[in-house]
Image 1 (cartoon, rainbow, N blue to C red):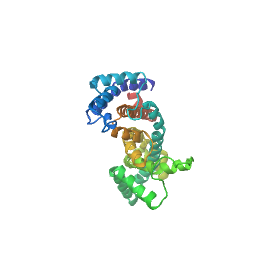
Image 2: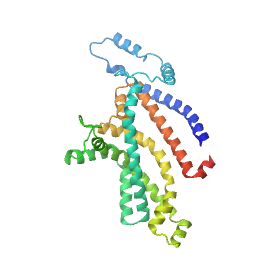
Image 3: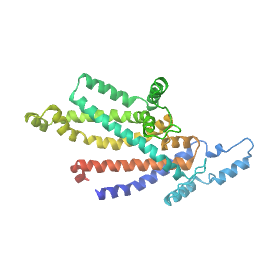
Image 4: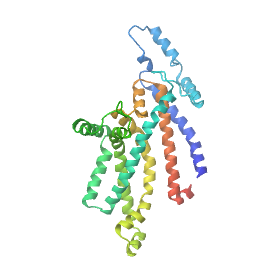
Length: 316
């Protein structure tokens, strides 16, 4: 497993370099630049040119990329072009909020998706299975921002039960206040994963229920619940490990939308604000952090899969 980890980490280096080149090129190809944020009616063309020179934006794109790469290798992510704060500090301030939201969403997806998939499989083609199927299809297809609007309208505006924006209420620093703020963003971010896990667990469990060992357990006098939870679950749950790894990209992209809608102070909200203000250093830093997070997530998924099923580890 140690060799696999080292091998995957080495493979990640060229992958991150390619991602950085593509991201940097796309940012530079986009219309507009951060200088627009500083322009006032009183500025002359020379003033605008001087600002562009001071920011290094008058240099060729490949020179700008090489300079950025040199800085990153030395641990310097640069400074924001808008608020002039170190980019690394801004990222570190936002990471806990984003990881907390992603972690709670992932946990909710597993806690709801696995039992729902098992119940659905155990009641195949019955009313509870049909309701589960409808829920899954709606969960996969519904846009997250639209679902967020429905929750805010229902639980904040009409019922006044949950706060609609932010991570804490001003002047209140309690765990319950933090949980109340996180309930709706967590549900929105986890909805799609709950639906996917439910369908995978249902399909995998139905397949396992046809295996010979299940018939043997039934013949030995085991109850339906005992067979389902004691023997079938451990085999059906293997795809969830892969799904969790595959769900990280959707969690990262979903965090951008969810954090913006709910005013959640994480990396997603910072990324959206940076995109609208053409803050290149922050955009690149968030892109690289997100890519690194995905690579680490997929690596952990492979490791956990190898632990759960040693046959996979031997094949590698």
